[in-house]
Image 1 (cartoon, rainbow, N blue to C red):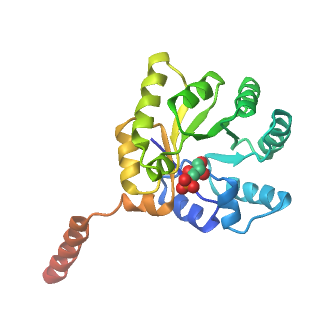
Image 2 (cartoon, rainbow, N blue to C red):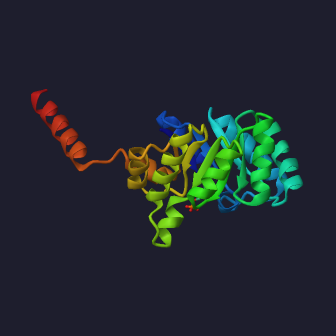
Image 3 (tube, rainbow, N blue to C red):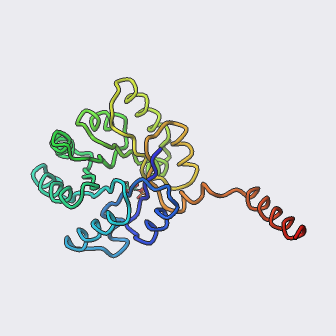
Length: 217
Ligand code: E4P
């Protein structure tokens, strides 16, 4: 399973990269705004900086909601760096734009996916990644994991190559459950990724090893 970090915070990206397990980055307009990155020029520069920090795919979201606008913005984003994946919303024009980019060999990430039907459409349009938002489904008392299960089944039934990118991951258990269900990728915060490291028996075991080492020396 690929690990993407879901942030526009350069320090956190560097930290995940230093761990040696990072396969890419996802961003969205809210994450950019959270870091105070506003205005087209600053946003473009920020994408360039992120691409310089990591080796993998970097999702950059279009703001336009019409086909022509998405194509114009997406082409400009894709021209920044071959690592850029054009992130498109799951709306009618987003599906059309996805088909346009995939037929040109430009990587896409169809975002704001909340149903198996939407994921099926994204795959039909040749999306590189589809982003089901599991945390936001959990927020409204709907089982986000069930959506991952449904999409996995549908994609496997037909051999779709679109990768399931579990998004809106909020905690460590989300990551583990996504891995069990065969999600190709997950994108989450650094805290959820670092949570995978933690076990009290590891900490107490290490403390004992170090204590015993000191006794013998
Ligand atoms: C996905 O690409 C989105 O950026 C993200 O995962 C949304 O997560 P949230 O629901 O925690 O905002």
